[in-house]
Image 1 (spheres, rainbow, N blue to C red):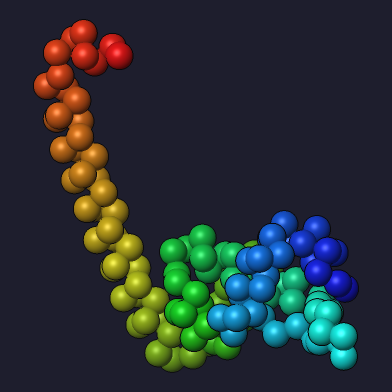
Image 2: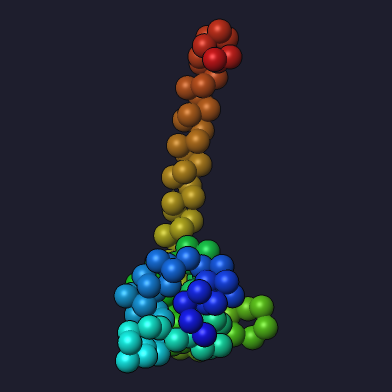
Length: 122
């Protein structure tokens, strides 16, 4: 399938598909004219990439993770021994970021609560 159909099938913009290719996450077949031709497995790969990005992984980590992931219906299963440890480290990073954001939110709540009533209404 060509780029336009790939965009329709995956809901991912052309620029993002090109970015995935630049990052080594996707490798569509190229015609002599330079046009990209995507396969059904590319559609599934984009779904995996989107799932891993939604989980908070960076594209560089996704490039390392993809060869070690199998899809089983609606879940991704790690197959490489070191992958789970690496994912745990990334999970800890995300947990720290969440805590920092919660602290920032509480600080803002304190500042907002201290505002005079007429300022708070504007």
